[in-house]
Length: 318
Length: 318
Image (cartoon, rainbow over all chains, first blue to last red; front, side):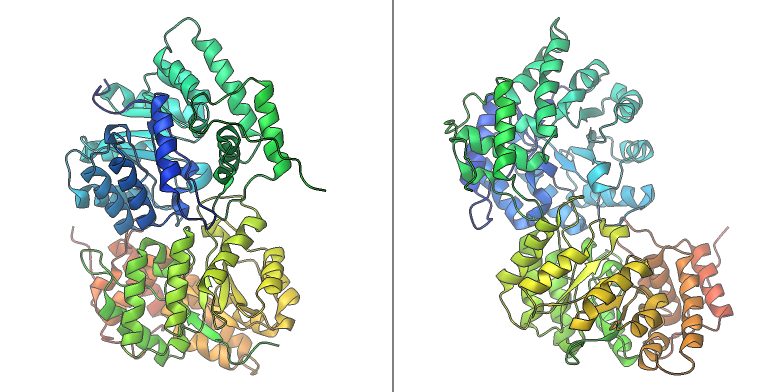
């Protein structure tokens, strides 16, 4: 059985706003996090959709301090702390624990490909040992399409044996339900918390003993996703899931991170939100327009979003 | 035509020694770099074989300072400075230029896959613009088997047009001669320096107008590789190439980085050299023994290597 004191439900890998000179914008970031919390969505800051690996360690530490300093409850935070370099992962993880974060979402070191489970075990073990905190909760981050370095059943088994307290769960962003189910079958009964990597898998994950989801689109569609998590045993759960899938499918037709930011830029009326760091590229104006139009046709809104005055649709100058 | 003032020849992506607690060992590192220089091999420190992405930015800055502080000529240095995060790449590159390094070897940001040439162009352009130094020389690092993010002909063309002074060359670690030849054909005549990613391609690269090679095995076989570079127009060049290929093939039968370190550990008589950082794993004793035996059968040596007293072959305890 899952430990009810651990973080669960729906979390957003919060998109990171940048200023015109590509610096992280802490003020907008705090505002966005507060809105997500108001929608009953937790904060998996510094995930793939946060462009976290495009941020320096110092920038991540500073943003985390700003969040907690602004009164955001660390019990709602699961920052990403897994880097290629062991000292970076240790430094970020230690700081997250010190601030009282509910857990950390940890990528494997992702530069070398084809590494062994033995090497990955040692990576995670070194971080856990060096941080040396019984209250650390590690969520392993399986995202083979991006990291290319997988979290396997065998690795989780070894970590659970060696660090049963700290090995709390995982996020499965494989996009492969059979993989998620294998982890649920193997480890959920003994209290390992599996989060689906996106909400199209949320209902199935809950029905198979999972803990929730951590999804890109929770950045823009938080309330309805959280509602499905809260009412997944209700009669209308499948209908809710279908509606979520419909909105997700619109975003999935565009490059995800620029599309999330374009939507936020539109519904906040704040075009600066569209800024991404290289190597990502913002949506072209015609793409952003198509996204907003498709969402509008589906009566999509972002209720209560700070500064939620839609920007006028821009037409490209000839 | 290539600019003769720019760095050329054979460079080693210098393996990084670690102490027992996995800290970088600056003293051993300086000693190894001096030996490589004595073999007429330049120093592409912080490459893939250096486990550079397993080091924090601070660790790399410190090692670079130690090298230059120890009197190593920065004109023989081409440190790797390409990171996932723009501020990290800028910081490392700026420091390398400040120290007077001959150039920097720059990975593309490698977390996100399938990014556009536009996004990669902006990544490199931002680094070049922010460093803002006419004496910066950037060597683009194409290593698709590891980084998974390629350097394309189109990207090089754009960078050469926008930054003709700073865009100095590339290292091609694709392992695909057709790719290397395409870059040589397209850009070498106008002075863009192509380095092969390993010495099996050295002779072909030189015959097609390339500048040299940057190779893992230059860590352990530096003198003979440098000699082929110096005498590639001689009558025995093909014979030299065949001999190099034979030694390379031995290393290629093992995980490369642990094998390089195992060989150095053996020929220096200093077992601490075998240490790698996770997620890599050192060779098992029987693998290390097999490597040394195979090399011994081919009369491989590492002449002049600091502390070059071979350790006794260890037999595994039963």
